[in-house]
Length: 171
Image 1: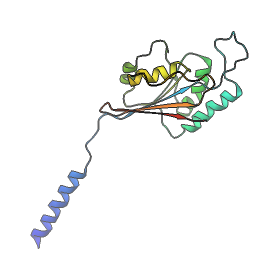
Image 2 (image 1 turned 90 degrees about the vertical axis):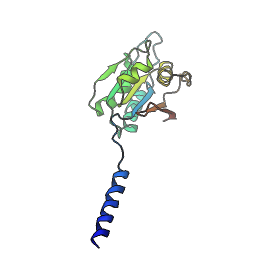
Image 3 (image 1 turned 30 degrees about the vertical axis):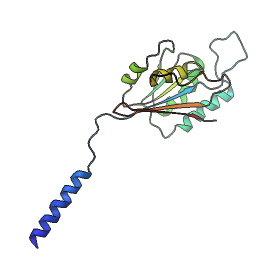
Image 4 (image 1 turned 30 degrees about the horizontal axis):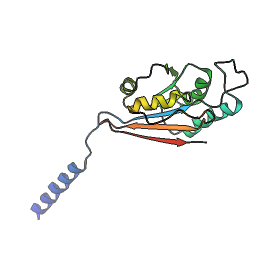
């Protein structure tokens, strides 16, 4: 009887050790890209307008859509409309905005700098798809229609470097 109990114990311990998952030292990276919310178009000469009331509402809505996500960083271009769009989410995550230059996009450097992080990036109708394409390493997405402020691009990068992406419209 003692032999059977020992044998059963050895089998149980063996099966338990096979069931354990290997430790992963790096985490998955997730990037959320959005365009700024509705901007004030009343002054055609103003190159740095603020958001409209609808835009301010959408900025808060984005923060509510992403309320269960814990961001490690929130990036914005240095324009009123992008910073105002990013601010509610940054505040919910107790983060300062990180300003980036949309002219000098380097997807590989961005991936490396944000490895294992969850990041929100706010840009423009042309820079957001360009940044997504730069991170993906291929030309997949076109400029966003000027009346569209509802696109959400999500890129997930596994520790092995595999990427997946999705485009959602959150209106």
